[in-house]
Length: 172
Image (cartoon, rainbow, N blue to C red; front, side, top):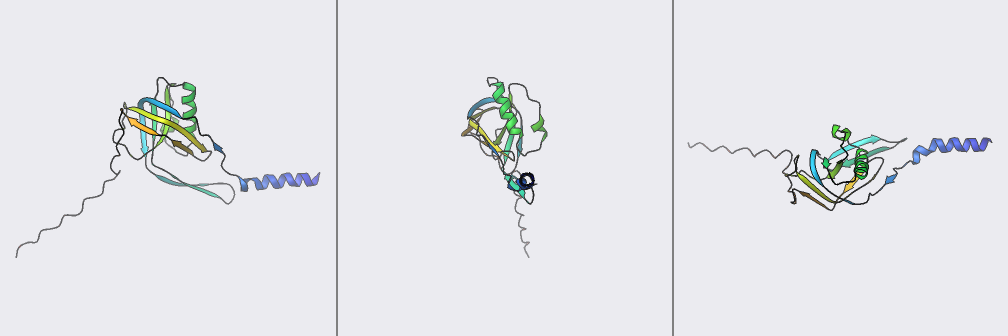
């Protein structure tokens, strides 16, 4: 009996050393058409997280939008499933905890800043899908349209400062 007991203890002790992220998904691609209720843009972020024994997990989260979209003709169960998967993302903001109506979905959309995005605008996402693991969520889509048009990128978050003006020489 002792060898089995010792084996179980060794396996339990060493198992965190070999733990890896368990992948989920990808979800079945979905075409979403709805009205933007709320949105938040966040730039690229680097973060580190302590992992199991002697490991540190670091990642770069690309620039993205968190969008609450009202999809009147969407399947409430599917919308809730997508929102739940988005909430597993390693992102902390109150929009992630927002209580959603049955026709609303929380979306994670990787994108640089877009000029046309605003509350009340119509958003179309073609072939939106999620995959990932317990550490992060990875969204993808084939096409994004705002008010029926391809969106344009906004300028940088902080525009460059103008160059200092050269002083004119005083005549002598």
